[in-house]
Length: 131
Image 1: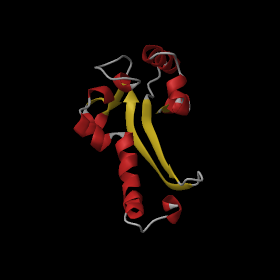
Image 2 (image 1 turned 180 degrees about the horizontal axis):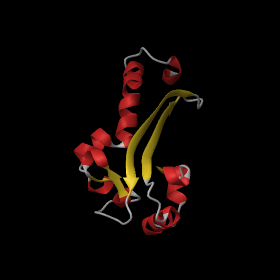
Image 3 (image 1 turned 30 degrees about the horizontal axis):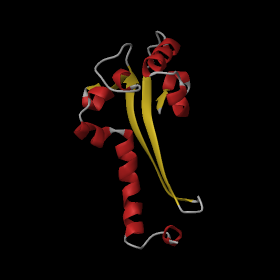
Image 4 (image 1 turned 90 degrees about the vertical axis):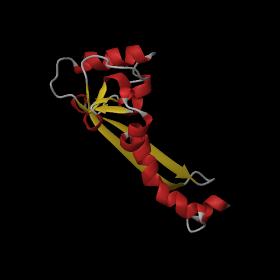
């Protein structure tokens, strides 16, 4: 989800529940942020691989830093049109797939998880996954 520094990390894990529609979620976030000059934020993604018993075997977290704009810019779903990524010089919603695969929080988490997955697939990892 999106974590806004000036809102103490909100909406965080409640990003999808911040309103009934994308429009309502963005409106609520911008209203709560108001005229604050401190608009730093992050998209944060977590990935977890569990064994059949539900025990965590691998976990990773990816973070994409940016800032919240005062109004929508470009397309995208969720908070993407108001989340400016300085490294890309555009909003998350305007980023092409090549940039999202390099800078996006999900891609960063997946790359972090990859070495452990590789070990598991080559049979060098946790035997609980093969049971």
